Amino acid sequence: MTPKQTLIKKLNTKTATIGIIGLGYVGLPLSLRYAEANYKVIGFDIDPAKAKQLNKGQSYIRHFGNEKVQAAIDAGFEATTDFSRATEADALIICVPTPLKEHREPDISFVTNTMDSLLPYLCKGQVVSLESTTYPGTTEEELKPRIESTGLKVGKDIFLVYSPEREDPGNPDFTTRTIPKVVGGSTPACLEAGKALYGNVIDQVVPVSSTQIAEMTKLLENIHRAVNIGLVNEMKIVADKMSINIYEVIDAAATKPFGFVPYYPGPGLGGHCIPIDPFYLTWKAKEYGVNTRFIELAGEVNSAMPEYVVNKVAEALNSQGKAMRGSKVLMLGIAYKPNVDDMRESPSVEIMEQLRKRGAEVSYSDPWVPGFPKMRKYKFDLTSVELTSESIQEYDCIVIGTNHEVFDYQLIADNAKTLVDSRGVFRKKQDHIFPG
Ligand SMILES: NC(=O)c1ccc[n+]([C@@H]2O[C@H](COP(=O)([O-])OP(=O)(O)OC[C@H]3O[C@@H](n4cnc5c(N)ncnc54)[C@H](O)[C@@H]3O)[C@@H](O)[C@H]2O)c1
Image 1 (cartoon, rainbow, N blue to C red):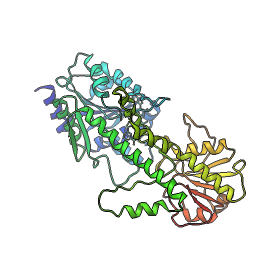
Image 2: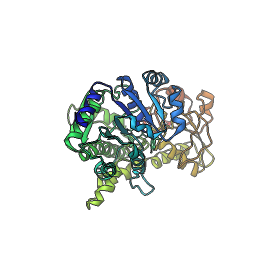
Image 3: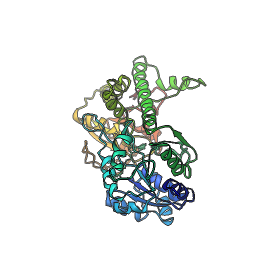
Image 4: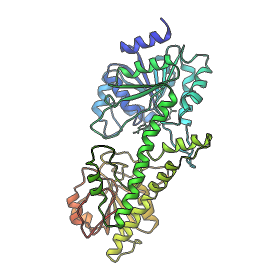
């Protein structure tokens, strides 16, 4: 049998060992899914604490409970920092971060470093899949030459695919298994290997004709969101000036059965994807002499939103005859979206920073983030305030940054002196509530 036939047979009979590199928000659920589907899974991470915790059956991501990690361990899952064990794997799936550098240029060093550390352990008959979001061309330009530097030929000895992750953390309606998965291969044989890799654990695999198509598909999805969120944020500002409730407008427009997709305004973009990924395309497009104007414009509108909310806080305080300096402000929700504990790029934190710079005394309440964590850009020595009628009454202004379901909004509205609502929780006009 050829290396391809052997690999596909192992994948189809579930005798293949799956190596997942990067056990974060993407790599962990994927590992759990392969383990659930009865594959032997080895998880690789450079963070020894993460590996140790997972091996004890403990999840560090709230929405994947300990039970799921324990079930994976019972099915043979193990986490390690020892990359030499990559020789045991038939598939190597790379799920490491792809952030931006300071000047919004892609930082693909995590991907290239991972590939470099795997090179000594690559073997004939393996499939390598990149899942990290990146610009079109990364797989062919960065991974393929590295792999072939070992003497293995892509498409003959070893197989290379790109398959973007589509996780929506905290969304109970979709699981890793039920979210269709786009796969592009470096060669037709690579695509066949990719289809076998994912087709046995994901309900619907969507093959595309190249790795570049798959890379750009992911970017289009996220750019579509970033641009539409920018649009609706701009609409929010106009509607507010006209004293029109933007949420009622969106809900009414959403009754149109075709040609309209509802997007909701907010305090700015958050999370690891939407604020970052579009700029991967912006950077690559420059190589072709193209300026991605929609992306830049959406970035401009969205990144001005925290300041917009801060100005609303000033307006709310002003209505009480108070200045920002010295006022006590409580930020509700510091995770970047409802019902998760993930704070990456959270606009709430930028709002807190701006409020502090303007002299406010800032606190926060977020049941999913009990202590303010270490962040690269921000430092707050705070723990989450428990919400009671007394504690709410202590603040001059309450700001809803993230609309977690666990908040008691009636209690909040009844006891807040003033409230800035950046998430459209309160639809009915009330004198002390300011849409933000
Ligand atoms: N979080 C999401 O919802 C989401 C959705 C779709 C796509 N993505 C993309 O998936 C990729 C991973 O994102 P994430 O959210 O899982 O990131 P994450 O930060 O949660 O996890 C990345 C993990 O990789 C580990 N790591 C870093 N460098 C490594 C290396 N050289 N070798 C091994 N492990 C290493 C880190 O310790 C961490 O555990 C990114 O490209 C991201 O854009 C994320």
